[in-house]
Length: 437
Image 1 (tube, rainbow, N blue to C red):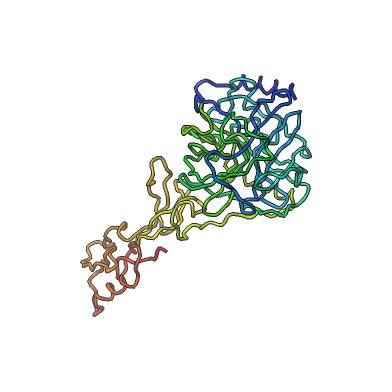
Image 2: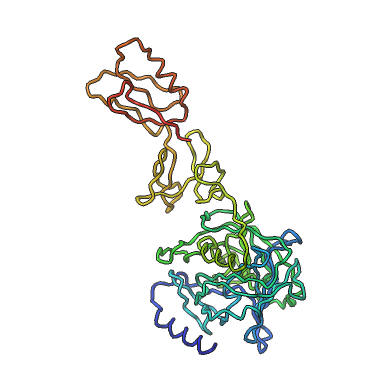
């Protein structure tokens, strides 16, 4: 183990690149750990400024511990199948404590003691699962297999699944896989972590599980190459929330109850209760392939989150699979998606600039008021227009040779409400309508 860590440290020194530090604050993994020769090391207790998380409502959130390498590591996890738990990788891997920084690509810069560097996964059978509002004294299950990202750092991709040696009769959480998470979504953190650093908290068997309502402040890109100021595949929350021992604990959607992320790190120089602390969660959705592999190894079927699809009605972005909710011409809102040159919008939609700064362009329905007045397609033809009572584009017609009254055009416009217009060459009527939604 020590030799492996030394090799990883050497590799990190080679890979360090000045100018790529995402933040100058220090980061700490949010698991609790104690060594036999360090009685003052941090241990876990409760979500900062939280509230009680009663049984049986939150019993799908479980206590995770192992004692590999003479080190007791205590974390939180979530039951996503009767025999499958999702947690952070650093909760089930050999690791060194210590502060570290992260580059914008997610590479760790250790401040000392190899902080931020992960080794191999621990033996699966060394992992214990305890349940209950206060964790049970005896484990209710043990690990049988670990399915992890094998990430060498807990800056990014800090995610693991533990297949259990038995099925548990406990609530199973839904999961968000392959869909988007919007900034501003209301979420709840649950965990067995401490309230603040130090303070002489009692041992973990006496600590209640707690929860706290939060708001997602930022969402990192799904790809490492898409560099932003937010680490790839992470979700951020601000202010008091998680602390040591909450690692691996879920970030649950308040709308659907699905797991959208697992707690990884906190960034900041203050205590867990500091208003300036920033919490990082590994975003679960981009890891759909790994998650489905873990379900397959557990012989289980995932309970997927149910959200609205493209074109369905919505109240806000959190209702939609693609995390985009736009207003239609009649004031109602529908689920949409991002668009661009490689992702054109379907018929009846156009690609518009985002309402929020720095956001992607989105597909918005083409409303009547957006289409503008129609024009006569046949050059030199006399025309006259009759405005649609729906308030959209006027019908423009060549003067009819017969006795077809003009009010038929107006009647058609009344019937075809919420429509858009386009020209049809050499037609008796220059414009035709098509329904959008």
